[in-house]
Amino acid sequence: MKKLVYILLMFIITFSACDPNEEIYDELDGLKEPYEAPLVNVAFTADDYATASKYAKMDAVSVGDADSSIAKLIGSMEAFNLTYTAEDYVGKVVGDMFPEYGKNSKAMVTYKYVDAIPEDLAIYADAESYVLGAADYESVSFEVGVANYFHPEFPADYYLPEILENSVTGASEDDIYKISYKYSEENPVIATSTIFTESFDDGLGQFDTTNVLGEKGWYTSSYGDSYYMSMSGFQQNTEDWLISNPIELDNSGSISFNFTHEIKYLNHQWNQLSVAISSDYDGSDISGATWDVIDWGDVADTASLGSGYDPFNSGDIDISGYANETIYIAFKYTSTTDNAPTWHILDVTVDPIKEMNTVAYGKTPYAKNDLYEFDGSKWTKLDDVYCLNSNDYDAMGVGGDDMFSADNSPQDYLPNFLTAKYPGAGQGVTKTIIYQYDSDVEGEVTLATKYSYTDQAWESAYDYIQEATNQFINNGTEWLFDPTVTVTMGTSNYQFIVDYVEGKYGTELINSYGTADFVYGVDAYYKEFDLNDFDPSHEEFSDIEDPTWEDGAEKAIGTLLLPDLFPDATTLVNGVDMYYRVIFLTYDYGKEVYYSMTFSVSKEGPDPEFELVETTEL
Image: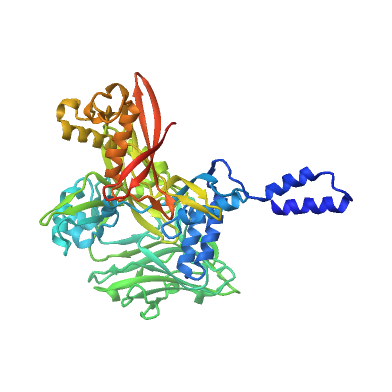
C-alpha cells in the first residue's frame, strides 16, 4: 500500500507545477497509518498453509533437518502440528493478508491442526503387537496348521485366548495387545500331493525373482489363456534369476524334472540362458551356492528354439541324483547390449517329491487385527473396539496402501462404513475404531477414534486432523493468538448440571429418567435448556432480583460447569485476557435458539471464578 502511495505522489509532483489536490494528498497520507479494522473472518487455504510452512522452515533452519521436515508438513498436510503450532504461525500469515490493519484489529481464523490423541484412545493405538506364527496355527488343528489361517470351521475368536495364554510372555494385568492373524471367509480344501507343479496362473506362485545386474527383471505375463514368467533385457547388460521355493524330494529311484518354455531373439547365443539346480542354496545368497547346470539341450531337439514364440517342452530330465535332498530350481537369464533374447517359462513340474499338503481356497485369506486385554490370568477380546483390515479399506474405496491420509480423511469414510457394518445400532451405541494413517514424515501411524450413534448418525469424538476457529488480535506490532476457549455444550455437560441438582436437592426436582432438572431447566437427553422448566422462584436464585432464564443459564454455566471443566483457569495467556465462550441450545414452546455466553476469569484456579461478559443470540 505504501509503495502505491509513493508512486502516485511522484507522478503528481512530476506532472504538476502546483498542487490543487491537497485533499487527495491528505487522504492518501491517512492510508499510510494502520487503522483498527472491524472483525474479519478468514478460512485458511492451501496457499496460506504454504506461507505458514515457509515461516516455520525459516525458524527450523538452525534446528536441523528433522524439524525442517516437520515444518514442511504444514504445507503438505494443510494442517499445523504440535511442533509448529497455529498459535505461533497463523498470526504471521494474517499479518501478510492485512498489512494495513492496526492495533486492536481482530480476525476469526478457521484452520486445521494435527491433534494429540486423547489418553483414553492412546491405550488402543499404542497397544503392543503380536503376530501369529506357524506354530500358533499348528496348535489349533492340522487343517489350520496347513492352511496357515483361520476360517469358519476354526474361528479365531474361539482359539485366540488359549493361543495368547501360551505364546505371549511378559504381559501384565490390564495390558492390551493388538493381535494380527490371517483369516479366510471360506474353509480351505486340503489335498495331499507328491508332485511339484507351477503354471504361474497366479503370478510368481512358488517362485521368486532376484535381480543381479541391470534394471529389467522377470515379470508375469500372458497371451490368451496362457500365463508365464517373462524376461527380456532389451539393449541392456542384465542378469536375472527365477528361482523356485525349496522342493523336498523323496528317496525315489526315478525323479523327473520337466518344463515348458518359449525363446525368441536368441540368435544361437545359448550361453545367455541356463537352467540350474542347487541343493545348498540358502534362499538368498546366489553366489555362495553350488549350481549344477542342466544340459536340457541333450534331452530334446532345440533346433526350433530361439526364433519364435512356439511353446517347447523340455521332456523329462532325470534328477534322481538329488533324491532325499531339498533342491532349488533356477532359470538364469543374461543379456548384453548386442543380444537380448526374450524367454518365457510356461510351467515347471517335478515328480515325485516328498508327500506334501496343498491348500486350495475360494477366497484368499486376508490380514485381520483384534485387540485383546489381559486380566492377569486370561485374555479377552475387546468387542467394542474394531481394527480396520485391508478388506475394509477396499470396501470404502480408500486409495493408497490400506491407510487414510490428508487426502482421504477418516471422517469422510468411517460414518458410512459404521452404518453398513452395524445396521442395527441403537441410540448411544459406541465403537472405537483403530485405523492406519499416512502421516507423511513419520510414515504410517496407528490411530484410534470413538464413534457414537446419535440421532440416527455416527458421530466421532476425535479426528487426527481437527478444525478450529480462533480469534487473533493485533497488538500494534503483530497478530497474537487470542486464547478464547469455545465450548459447545454436549450431553455430559448438561448431565453434570442435572447431577448437581439431584445431589443437592434430591430426585424430586429431577425427571423420572434422571436426565432433566426443574431448577435450571437443563435437559441432557435433548441437549438444551428448556425454558419452560426453569424455576425463577427456586432458592438457587434468591440472590437475584426478578431472575430470568438467562440468569439461570449464567449461574449454571459460570458457577457450576466452567469451574468443573477448567479448574486451573488463568486470567491471562501470553499476556492476552482469557475468555471462555459457551454455546448452548434453548427450547421454548417449540422454538429452538442457539446462544453463546462469554465469560472472563475473575479469579484464577484452583477454585476459579467466572464473570459473564456478554450473551449473544446465534
